[in-house]
Length: 448
Image (tube, rainbow, N blue to C red; front, side):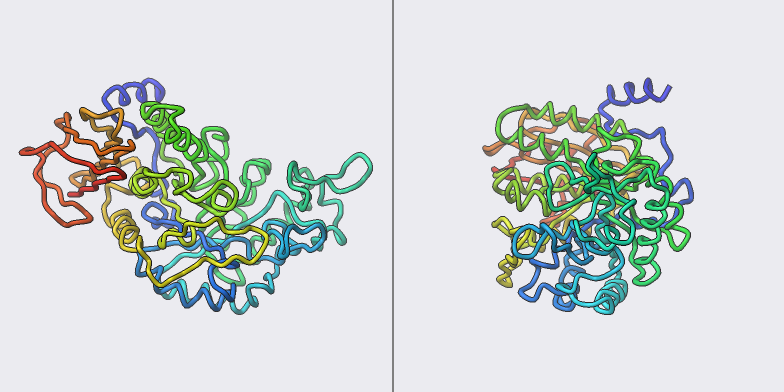
């Protein structure tokens, strides 16, 4: 029955599924999940000092920019054996319940969380459950927690020789991991976890871990997996990655697929429903370091894709320095600070989008009361146009996804009445004029 309903609504141009209850409707706590955004913090590269104390000074600026949730990249000590580069990977943990001295002390981190909460910000930390570094304390105290090769040696993760994989068939390992996660809730009062390579860990571990950890407080859970590929994980996490979208948008910009292919992909994501949300992004720590900045990857459509990330159904995710914008690849294993210059060219751009996301009910993520419609234009092969509705609240988004200016006409009676341009504050009545010009890299966002 649900499948038939979904086909029917897609035929009407609706790209949202309203057959599932939202987490709010199921009386789950933390309604802020539906209106939040996530700002990924690379402490090592954020300041010259690379410390919690130095970053705390930046938080009022991020608050003013409309940031709601801070995601801290791994804060645990880095294993030294087989480490990469001069400083090692933060994803090769040496101890799950200690602080990387590179960043400061446990008290420094507690201060950061308290100050974030005072400012009205949430804090989630990166949790690397699949593997540790070679000299993690457990390799000495509990070698049975690990996967082993036939010769008894620790099993290195595929393609990453500085980390070794844990054995989730061992119930004692599971309990120890859950206890380690609880440590950070009890000691520092964080608000959730971004779970690294979540789908590399058996889903039943997360099914076990989440309710046990949340006996302390309700949390936000962001998982690094694509729900199109790992649907069972979406039943556990509040939000997941949109890796397929990220790769396909690059293919589109490179001329390998059509805009209709991207729209078809959005239908697939929307068919998942609203039990969980997708996180949309144009950059993160992996992409920036290994594949290039958003401008290297997406060129002229980098900003339209940023607008998409903040206005489509889900959670917008932003990486350190995108507000500059940062135009360089940051080194991963060595000190390479962001080149802040005091001129945050895109701060107002992101502020406008984030404030709209948090204030207009039509942009609530993971809420079955919100419907998303593709809007028909005379330039559907060049423009991504959509309308999101929640009762009498509406947001209309027009994105130039081509490499040239576009003159378009909205050919959809659903778009009608008075709207306000969120960037210019100008009013527009779409009953009187549905002709619009979009510059190269152009975007327009209207609300009512």
